[in-house]
Amino acid sequence: MGSPELLVWAWLPLSITSSGEFDPHAVTAMDKQTPPKPGDDFNVVIVGAGNINFGSDEGPWNHSFRLEHKLGPRLKVVALIDPSAARADAALQIKRDSFVLSAYKDTIVYPTMKDFIDKHKPEHAPRAIWVGSPPAFRGREEQGRDVEKQIIDAFPNVGIFIEKPVSTGPVDQALNVAKRLVDAGNIVSVGYMLRYLKVVQKMKAIIEENNLKVMATNARYVMAYEHTANFHWWDKAQSCGPIVEQATHFCDLSRYFGGEVDLSTVMAHSLEHFEPAGQLAKVPIAEDKITPDQRIPRITCASWKYESGAVGSLTHAVALHGFNYATELDVICDGYSLRLVDPYNAPVLYLRRPGDDHEEVIRYQNDDPFFSEVANLIDNIEKGPGSAPILSSYEDAAMTYALTWAIREASERNIKKPAA
Ligand SMILES: NC(=O)c1ccc[n+]([C@@H]2O[C@H](COP(=O)([O-])OP(=O)(O)OC[C@H]3O[C@@H](n4cnc5c(N)ncnc54)[C@H](O)[C@@H]3O)[C@@H](O)[C@H]2O)c1
Image (tube, rainbow, N blue to C red; front, side, top):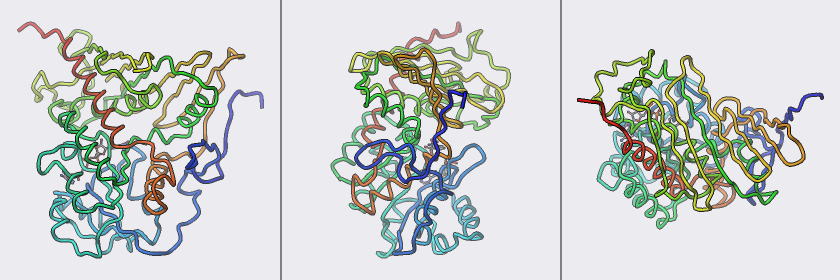
């Protein structure tokens, strides 16, 4: 071929087999799946009528679309829970005007999970609950933000999907919720979908097959802020800031490779809005409406030790104009550099290994990690726990949440306040 590029085409099912082996040929694209067969109804409750569950222009996410392709005519969305009835009705109308009418024609909108639990008919008991509400309304112990507790108390056998980050509340409460879910024994999957990427699984396979020990991870997340016009994203009081809200995916991948972090070792510095180098020319919202101490950092640089002794680091930047982010994760092992580039849009793995100073380029066509995470949870519910790998458990995701807070807090300890 003359090119170092290795194009691997996909034609077999499941990217990681239930025994944990990576299959590069697995079909993960929705349009390459065997069409779902007719059969018994599969009741699903969707929580949140927003972008993650029903799609948006900003990215490829859209859980309902993937549920439709996994379950076909069996899908029955018995309830859509959202305090905004208008948003829920609008999402349902689009579905009812389309070929997936049968899944949504009888969907009832409820403002809260409690309402659904109190009022639903027994035949509408769900087999899966898909939680894509904002994290401020979950992962806590106080009433109204304890959706996980409400679910497991009412539906002990239901499978649960929960979006990242698991909460915006205190870390110890998220860890308690994790324990509660483990004790309840429900099947739970959290939306760290980058773990399902074939390039990421390939990296795991290389490390395992060669008995490698990860020596370092180095994550870089340079976001393009010019069109991020979501006011709450710029306000730490609402979003918790870009490490907890956004870099969480890269903190999670870092942990996926590096293992558990010794949180007492986390160190971090930030570049703040009031510092000379922190002035941004294209902020698309009225940042002066946000209390100064709640405005987000422009740069956060953090480092930490893993329990293995390996070292992790992260640079997050709010810096680019335009639309595309620049994101990379290096995983360094003895003799090996595994460099994951652009996992969101066009994932590529640059691999250097012993015996060759050049980097091999590995990419997979038609990979859909969002579909894999949806399909694997449904398979676990239908065929039994372990029938397909669930790559992000709630306990694991709660530890990622803890890491993101440790980074934010370490950087805030080092802020030099502006002169009054
Ligand atoms: N994995 C990914 O790549 C990815 C991508 C986008 C969003 N997300 C995550 O999905 C979650 C939701 O984000 P979004 O972009 O869909 O937000 P969104 O603002 O578009 O939608 C949230 C919806 O939830 C509703 N809602 C508010 N409180 C609720 C409650 N208590 N119960 C039920 N619904 C409630 C809102 O009315 C709104 O309709 C966030 O945690 C976000 O981080 C993940």
